[in-house]
Image 1: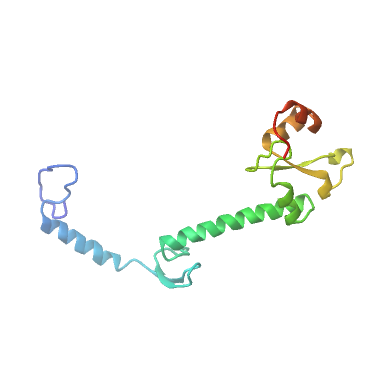
Image 2: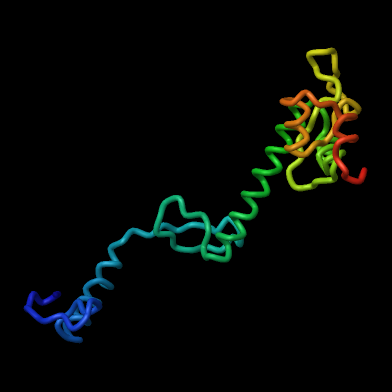
Length: 160
């Protein structure tokens, strides 16, 4: 392939007619990589200097990339919690205390913050007017018109 000689493919992996042809292509490719522009950067995780092949490269190794992604994910979750606590006009600690678990079934994975007395009926934005509910119970209360007392009677969950 590299020397433009015709040759018979023995299998699909053969791309060169001989080892010499393969070596010539490898030498050409390595010499071509010297012309690729490299940028001096400092790793955002370990602060080590490295040569980056892209302008926006932030990390020096796969290990640092995984740490960077974990930190970014945690920062994103914290920003979301801070945003929600601002919406409900309570502190971050109070919000985290409310959404710790569903007050009806004890579910802890994804808990919504629910107004006990709706704001449309004069409810206030205070910690005492909020309650943590799982998505299923939150749906039952808002869409099906159930009350918290009805849910306690219907569902055989232990109170937590």
